[in-house]
Image 1 (cartoon, rainbow, N blue to C red):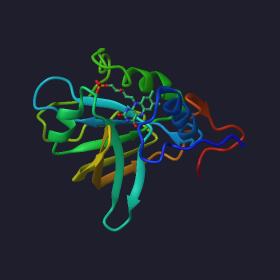
Image 2: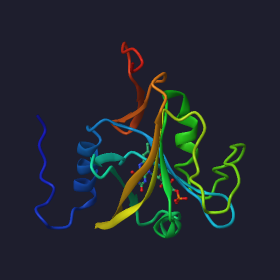
Image 3: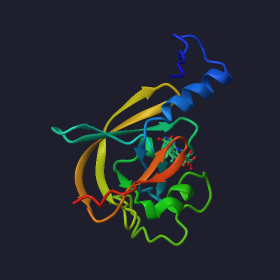
Length: 177
Ligand SMILES: Cc1cc2nc3c(=O)[nH]c(=O)nc-3n(C[C@H](O)[C@H](O)[C@H](O)COP(=O)(O)O)c2cc1C
């Protein structure tokens, strides 16, 4: 098995970083879009693979956002945000919300915008509507912890999977009952 040290506290050079990223990419995840209303203009929307459950009581979830993301300031200021878990049919949505400043919401009905409502993407596999619970330093990322105030799940779809730096789909497995 190939092995690599993450550098024991010293800064990683470009090659060590690449190997670190490749090792992290061996952890298969789902894909979600974090959405949040803005007071004006289109809502925030950003694709993440860093979504995870944290706590059942209280109900907490987390995701981390790169400090270079244009949406970071608005996400930090948001009084509510939602996690939209994508289906395997939503690869285009994932790609669309993974690009900065590119008409992310074109053709998507996000409802009335007054900053007071959660924004949800249509046809998600599951949604978690959250209020901010905590924010933590995560190095070059900021870790957001949300307290879930409402959630829904469809149970009739299949998840979009991200593994090895590319999209995958579950095979030979029936949709979750
Ligand atoms: C499958 C996938 C997973 C991603 N996961 C994350 C993530 O967990 N955190 C993050 O900050 N960016 C992640 N990104 C990159 C962001 O989606 C991208 O930088 C962001 O949408 C840029 O939008 P913004 O600059 O307008 O905020 C991911 C991209 C893809 C395609």
